[in-house]
Length: 240
Image (cartoon, rainbow, N blue to C red; front, side, top):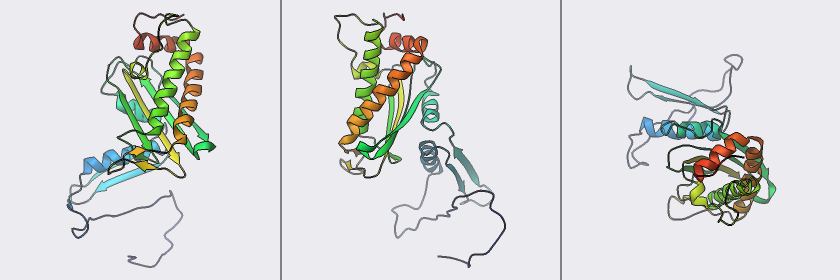
């Protein structure tokens, strides 16, 4: 509800929207909002939408305001670095990142990844900036494409036994931190509430092909880091 008619206040310094929000008990089960939960979500949104600046201020307690501001010039790369911080000991210094558009899925994809010495897998998926905790076609495509790129590089440089099997997607995921984000014109979500899986069929092949191509190109251009990655995934191999 407007409180006054529009008026000129001077030249704009920046653009955007300011929203004041006070939840009502007639709509929400609880009117207590967690500053930490909101801040974590706004951090995600700022990272997933490169260049977007989001500020959050908690003015519920007069005299004790809390405020944070998020902006991510590095996009998904910044997200991987943030997720990696507790693990430490990256296998390679550079966060690998790439983005591309594919008309077949009517959308764009952005992927960032890095391997760490830790054995834990940390892979986060998003569709239209919405978390997909139950995976979906974009995550399936990412795993397929990453495995194809790593195996192709390993075979080309004879880093795996000629008669041995390819490295599985699960093996390649050990110690991997990754963010897989797609933005689609017509996303299809599925699964039980909160419908946390992406079901758009064309996305799997599009993401798999894009990751295979871009990650393969990166590995070829960074042989020392590529050798360290292969040695982390399959101990006993050596760079050539």
